[in-house]
Amino acid sequence: RKEVEQDPGPFNVPEGATVAFNCTYSNSASQSFFWYRQDCRKEPKLLMSVYSSGNEDGRFTAQLNRASQYISLLIRDSKLSDSATYLCVVNVRENAGNMLTFGGGTRLMVKP
Amino acid sequence: ETGVTQTPRHLVMGMTNKKSLKCEQHLGHNAMYWYKQSAKKPLELMFVYNFKEQTENNSVPSRFSPECPNSSHLFLHLHTLQPEDSALYLCASSPLTTGNTIYFGEGSWLTVV
Image 1 (cartoon, each protein chain N blue to C red):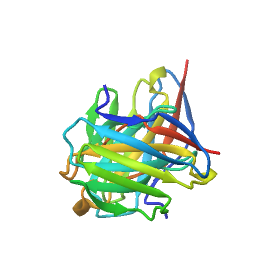
Image 2: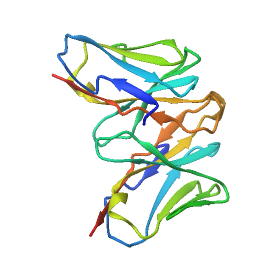
Image 3: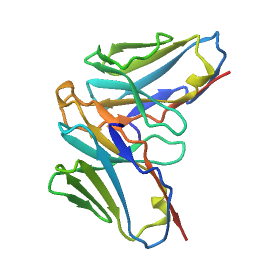
Image 4: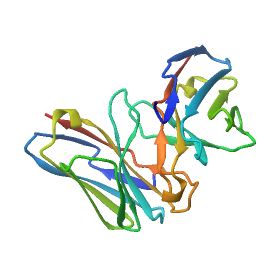
């Protein structure tokens, strides 16, 4: 079983749509969770951290469900510029510092 | 804008060549990382350095040899690579405090011919 699993997509949505991605992780001791965004042929960049109580940043909302070991990302009012691959990232070995494990990514394509 | 710079951005090398990738971070971080990203595969952690000391070698073949002379610089020495080693190699850095995110360089695109 993969440590961090995501649906690879692609998710094809029209501008203005709401889209949600889920991610599951296998290590119940995981402590820190993030969503990164990666544009084609570019490096991953932090989109947002995911907090236990859920958090929002503009059109983006992240949720964490520890009991079910999944993380979600909701994007409202999709823009063309949101087209990218979204990486779910989990810190699975807290004592060793930042040993981040990446999911394979979910590709989003927003169409006019 | 990026606080982590990598050179070269693109590299083509033969299987018998020796080359090196360089990474420098200007963020005052104490941990540095090498990741490999192959087509259609998740990012794979290769090496981790904390305060110049290697703390993780994720079963990487010896044809990849990392070097960390100080907390700001990280190298990946390449020797006798295989075509399947062609990938994007990403350097990253972070503070040592747990729970912090890591910051990536723009990556070095490596093609082995």
